[in-house]
Image 1 (tube, chains in turn red, cyan):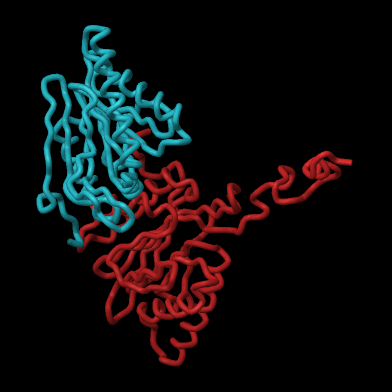
Image 2 (tube, rainbow over the protein chains, first blue to last red):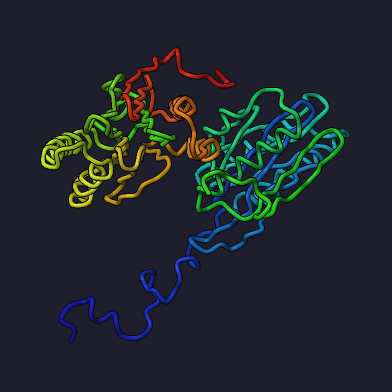
Length: 233
Length: 203
């Protein structure tokens, strides 16, 4: 007879949530705890993201691609639950592809952003998705739309998202100027993402960049040892 | 009242330190004091920046101010910055369950020049710069990018732009900016009013 209830639980392997034999990360949802960024310039947009996907403390994927194409010249940057954002992106890519065929012309970035908003707002209670929609179209050139958790939609010249974004708001506010060139935007994005990856435990890995303009999409990867150097190290 | 809704920072330069803070004290959604000076003097050349619970932080600063006075009389000379930081740390650590305050201690002494110490949760660590309070999250990236070793006094005073950035993003920080510059020769207190703060691309 056990003197107290707690003594009885020590018999046999106990796979309850408190047991140390079962690691925490097998029970935690996969999340893209993340840093993402998108910047408009005259003639296109630059987007960037880190590459870490975590389940709790375990890094499930250290080379994730969070820059997802929705159409030829429209991309989205995903943050939040990996499953939710992948599902939404698939749905929107389908809807946009269909719409574009009906129209017989390339879709507007604003349309893609509204499709994201529609899904994220309708299912706001079930979803955890923070998305940046960015791309180029003939009517308005480069555009960045922010669809944060909750399903709001707002166009901004520059936007950051994900858990690591809090650390770079100050850097972004002070270093972004209207009418920067594409190279300046790429440098700003790479530096901002590096700074966030240094401070945020859920962001890390490599920096993925893409620039979208009338001429198409250019993608590049900056590996860990090639990242800009920060002065405090 | 809760000072955690705050932005404070302290930076070491070649020959001294600069401390900065915003001036907002909120209780929930209400701003109880919009011009509070969160840079508290512990000794002639040692200041601390307060964040966390207003009551806890102020009390710690007052107690350490007293303890430092006694200590400096005992040793017959100006106290070291590390001594002040240790006194703050001892209180923060001993009462860590009851208190919720983070003080950044910074100052100048003859032996080691300008120094900045963080005392969060009862640790003691010397750092080239330290930021604290809820607004600090937004400026970690900026300070990481802009800080360089061996900056001049003027360059450090430009770090008031950090406070402005944080005050723009953090709903719990705002008001005016207080700046204190301490070096071998003088201790200078300055206020930068709201309309004189640096502005950015979207303002």
